[in-house]
Amino acid sequence: MSYSPTLDPEIEDALSQTPEGRDVARELGAKEKRRRSAEYPEPTTQDILTFVDVQRSNNAIWWERIRSERQLVDLEDQLPAKWQKGLKDGRRIRVAWAMNELRRVAALMLANNPKVTVKAEGATPTARDRAMKQTRWLNQLKPGVERAQRTKVFGQAAYRQLNDSVAYFEVYLTGAYDNPELQRQPEETADFADEATRKAMAKSYMDRTEKLLQKCGLPFGIRVGNATSVLAEDCEGPLKRVAIEEMKPRATVFGEAAKNDGAWNMSVTELRAKLDNRGGKSKQKGWRSWVPSPFAPGAPVDEQSDWADEVKTVRYYDERWYAYLVDGVCLDGPREHGMSFCPVIPVPCFDTGASQRHKRYWSIITGMVEQELAINDILTRETDAAFTFGRPRPVILTAV
Image (cartoon, rainbow, N blue to C red):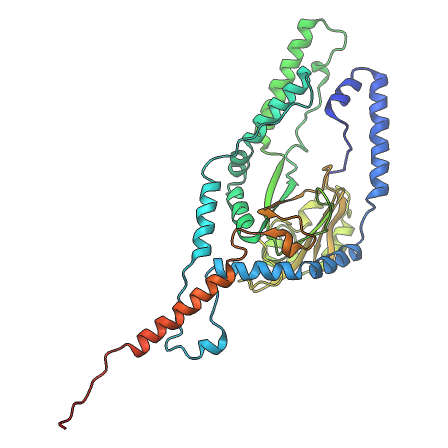
């Protein structure tokens, strides 16, 4: 989908009333597109890989803290190796305070759907009507997305936000609105018709398109990113450039392409050549069926997974461009993603405003790690000692 800069809806509606206004709207749109072309040039594969390397280094200290907190919540912490050797049975005793606190707070967060109120931008009826529609839409966002995707998206986000200190929402277009015929048909348009005829035509158009849109489903989807997979550039306000680096099973990544002859046995370089031969970035018929799926299940690069045959993937976003790399080869894009913002949105648990990431973002268990580890260590060693040395032993009595 190509990017089409849009004006403010009220301005666009006002300009669309006359042929001269439509010409002005097209000129403003072209000017905006030229500005964005200069501000966001098309990235190369090497640009993306360099960005990933730099951001991975910048995140190292923060990610180390996240991993230590995850070990506590996932009940995977262990005694130091020196002490572990002295245990009789090697059993680890854990109090699970962090895990229980996270579950309790997450349950409170998800008990009710969020309530949102959008204030009108002005006192005009159009502004009030727009604010009312946005309020209604946002209040139905959570149940609507989870119903459409059949996944507890916001439950996953709550866990990531509380445990990892930041949840990342990755917004992507589903293409649901690409095929339906939403343009007005000749029989639904009449500039010089009387009022009654125009109303009848408008109702006919709304009835037709409403049925089409209901069948299409949501035009966008939401995916929750893992904090140790998301590589974001520091900036004030919304994110400008983001890369999501994950290891994924080859079977699911190449699932669509594998339906075509020989795709299973291809390397990513061979598949890239096949894509180029079938039209490259164009929408030639059949080309999209060869592009690997970017939304297969993934895991952070430095974490252990259960997949035998893995490939490293990178999804890159900025305010204009999207690219999908598999094992360092760009298999989709760079192409314009069709949204007017970088579609990866961070939602921090606590934002202290510090300049260093490991000090800026806090989870609800930040500061609890050392205390809980100490309690777990004491309980483990004391319990082991009680079982080892507290067992009854026979005593031989002799006459004095």
